[in-house]
Image (cartoon, rainbow, N blue to C red; front, side, top):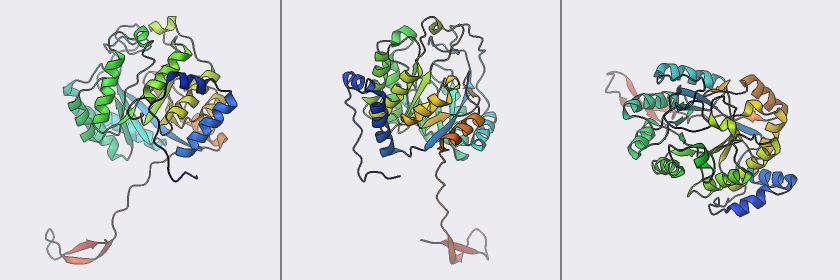
Length: 352
C-alpha cells in the first residue's frame, strides 16, 4: 500500500457545523472522501478482529437506560461475581485460536474496587503473555488505578461517551458526561491507549450522533479506537420506549464521518452487527470501518459467529489483521568465557 511520505497531524478543531456539511454530502462523494482518508492511514483490505468477554456481569449501580446490566432495570440478566483468572485466560486462548488479535474484558461496575484490582491486573498480565493486545472496561478510574493497569501491561482502556452532551441526561443520571471525560483524561495521562465511541438508535437525533463524534474528534488526542454500536432491543431497559433504530445508510454515513474526522483511529463495528446485512457491513468497510468484534456474544448481546465473519471477509477479498511477529532473539555466536552459573560450560556471546 502506498502511503504519503509525510502525513499531517489530525485536526482537533472540528465544529459541528463542519461535520454536518460532511455528513450531508451526496453519498458517492462522502464515501470517496472517506476512502481517500482511510487509504492514507490503513490497508483498506485489512480488518482488525477483537473478542469481548464479560468478566463480571450485571448488578451495576449505574442507571444507563440502554443497558441490560443495570441493577435498576428488570432485564433478566443475573449478577455474577468476578471471574477467576484461569477461566479468563482459557477464553483468551480460545479467542486467539479463533484469530482475534485483541482481547477485551468488561466488568459491570461504576468503578472498580481496589480489592478487585489485583485480579484484573493478573488477567491483563496473563492475556498479554499470550501475545494478545489487552483492553478492559471497568467504569470510572482514579489516577492510581490507571497506574496499576499500566504497570500490568494494559494496551487499551474502553470508556464510551455513548451519545451527545445534550442527549446524555436523557439516558443516564447517575454520572455525567464530564465524569466520563475525566476518566478518559486519567487514562491518557497514564499512557494507556483510549478506546471510546458511542451508541446510535436510542432516540437521539442525527445532530446528536454528529455531536458525539465531534466531542471525540476535538479531544486533545483522538481515541486510538472508536467503537460504533447499534443499540440492541433489550426488554426492560427504558430506552425501549424511545428507541428509533438508525437506518443502514444513516449508519454508513456516520462511519464515514468518523473516518474523516479521526483519520488515524481504528473505527470498530461493535454491538448490533448481528442485525446488519452483509451488504451493510461491506458498505461500512468501504466507509472506513476497519475493526470488528468476533465471537458469538458481546457481553450480554448476540454477535455474528466467527464462521460468518470469515465467509464475509473471504467474499469481499478482505482479510483479518495479524499481530506483528515478536522480535527475534539475538543469534548466538561464539563462546564468551566460562558460564559462572554452570562451571565447565561456555557462556554464549550474542551477536551485536
